[in-house]
Length: 118
Image (cartoon, rainbow, N blue to C red):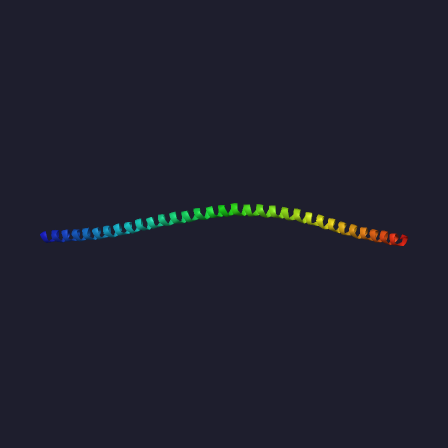
């Protein structure tokens, strides 16, 4: 009987040792999961920071693009205005050139008449 009790105690000790081993393994798994959870949190924090930075860059780019569009619109308007003025000046030069030619013809005619009378 004593022998059977020793065997039972040994078996219980073996079971206890196995449970302790399992418990240690579960503790190891829990530690690994905790580490993985921390890595994931850190990774998500870094990703969120990068997304925030990217969102700010896109927002800054949007503001910059709006400024560029406004400048292009302003430059286009000024270009159109300058071209209108240029065509106006060109018309005036053509007019003055024509008048100069007409006046030179008139002066030539007057000089001719004057030369005939003298």
